[in-house]
Image (cartoon, rainbow, N blue to C red):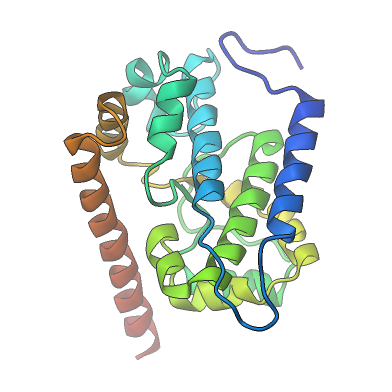
Length: 241
């Protein structure tokens, strides 16, 4: 497949090596059988965020149809983003990627019937399969290790509903890989339909990671994530009452 203009196409060999290194690092994370505490994997969270932003930047630079509606209104902000600004934006303290983490019903369904095809209620768009599978795998590995490190923190910073966190915590590595491959179309940027929020993040990242703009954005974003989880819990309660 020809390279799209402006896209920073990753080296397949380097990408494979990085993915293997990532899995090795996560698999050998400091987990003590005696129950000692495990450090929360913020560095990995930042890496997943940076990869998501890189994919959005590549899509903005491409002449092909954008995979998500938020890219068109953000094109002027995304196109000039170099490695430094992408890294600054990625170091926000929460996950910029989502994979139906708010939806216990969807996660229960795919865990009980892993080979069945499930449609999401609303079409959001999707990354190319080549990009989505490794991003989904890394996101799920991050979620699993975050839950082991600190369940409450993981739910807040990753936007995980508690029942979803419980399901992910019980996944085996082979199950994580299978979900990443079969459900890759369900990995998407958080706030995929809210370009104003992403615009604030990109503007704040240009001001600097320690700027007041970035701090204000972090507070606002965490409020949005918490509100979304509460709204989903209310919805699930109403469905079962």
